[in-house]
Image (cartoon, rainbow, N blue to C red; front, side, top):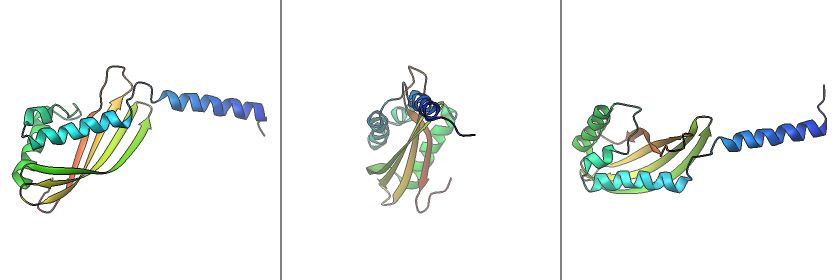
Length: 141
């Protein structure tokens, strides 16, 4: 059965409103990128408590702390970081921001890192790190 043109247009309009509504309350990518950059700046300045504050409660604070300590023991302190790629994925519950960085450490090693920040649709929510993956020689997790 074929839908009339008016019904199709109406359904498309509703879908557009529905999809557009998924991002209500989520900041633009610049806000999330400032959070990601502030995370690396805190590491550069060796302010670990501040760096920890950028992680979400998707894992216990102690797990994130162990993660940061493992990075520092294996790779050293962050010397520099460069943003390589950004992806944004909007879902019903909020928005994911995926930032790929090239990070150089005091050990002389470089790492390809992906920070995934999540911001829910809750009005007072802010983007926080939900996942932090590192690919570097001599680093395993």
